[in-house]
Image (cartoon, rainbow, N blue to C red):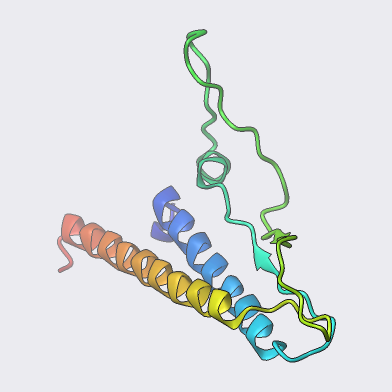
Length: 133
């Protein structure tokens, strides 16, 4: 088993890929802020519990009636696009709010930096455990 196949590392890697794709989509929204008829789009946040169960081969089992059931996901692992129907549309038909997009870009950047920090710290922890530090 390769180190990169560990569930926590694969989840963090998937999360970083999602943030990269979301950054691309947000940049597209900003670049089309003056395009007539353009509607902004965003990515749905991935369900990490489902991703963890798929990568590790472990599924949730309800052993008591009082327990909550696991969320059954599915999908091909690609990121789904989400279109929010709440737009302030300008007379030209454009619905991009630069303020909203820039707030999303800043939040996405902070979340990406947190994921990369967790990923590098997890790798350093494994190196320390192996005595390679």
